[in-house]
Image (tube, rainbow, N blue to C red; front, side, top):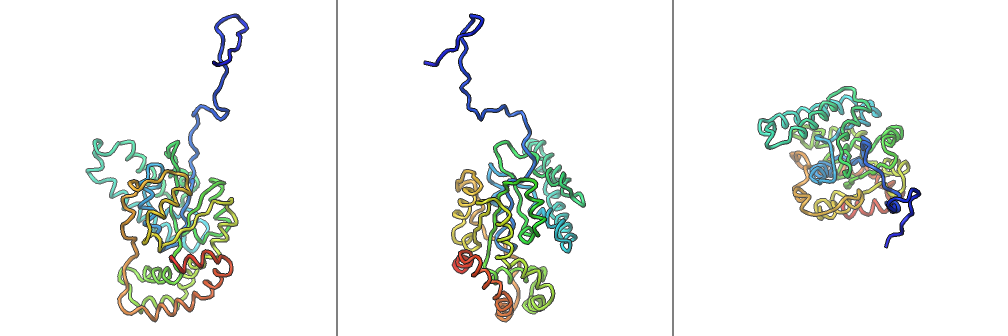
Length: 317
């Protein structure tokens, strides 16, 4: 029987307030900020991850991948390319959401479509500012997590990471890794355009463009930079090879890391082939030998500084 407290006025006895000390009325708006980022690496499965996380009801991601807000601001040489790529994605998304069937209020709730179009408006503004970036997460539900996937963030300088953490000091970060040689080969093919050839890949590998390819493959440097600036336990690393061999295992670990429920039926695209771009024509063995030699010092450095990551890449990269 509950203890009763005698009222001072002799009226009906009052019951004690036994609510949790954490009780508070939900009278505030959820902070418009990312709860998590996936920072790459490029050509390591980030497109696959974006396609899958978008289907989880407890997660909210922008309607386009690669917002690239922080890299646009802190890697000046990439600003125009990032902005052009963002504009291209926004144009594709607008075309999709302006299809007649998706303008039907019976099929798509008007308020949902309006939210998507508002986000696309924010993504269209150049240059974007913090208010535009925050607008991407404005409608995140009270029991949802929100985030975005931009592999350009892997190589952010410390000031860029500091800016990301200014939105959320407890930001969680996901890194997908692929064996450095395989990743670089795919990167070179992408830089060739729609019809990559081994001769063009070799030409890029021996040019100044190689510096950007190697930058992404310098896992030890950028992983330790991010890890050193994040609170303990806020960085999760997984591997491209496991996306191929055990996709549900990868998604289970990421759900556990983010703290959202896992169920296989939430991820209908989990076993779809990861997009790897066009395959180059010709024998790639010479290019691979060049890439392997150029990346050897970086992989040796990874073995010294993060031996467990290097070993995992040897098994699963």
